[in-house]
Image 1 (cartoon, rainbow, N blue to C red):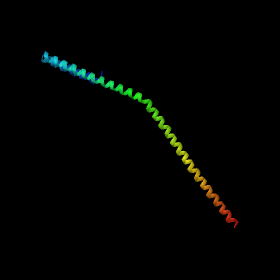
Image 2: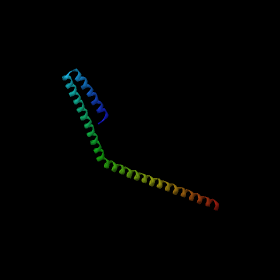
Image 3: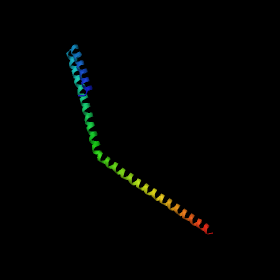
Image 4: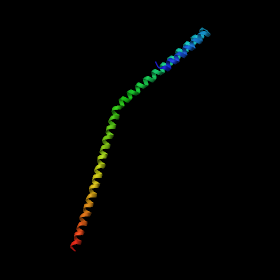
Length: 116
């Protein structure tokens, strides 16, 4: 039993003792009030516990879908990374080819100058 519930029960018992000193009808009213308070608190605690278990069940049922979505996002991320790597490779290859063309044309022009 939660400590707050036992504390409230203790307070209700104290009310009952005070009520019994004041007379029997008031003691019965205090006892009834105490019992009603305790029952309301137990019902509330039970409802919270049921809601907690329902939430846990919902989360457990959603977990496989969440795992699948996470895996799918990782696959997409890897594909995007691969595409970027391919794009970077293609760009670098084109740059290297352009440099080679420039250097070979530079060599040709320097050869022509030497011949002349």
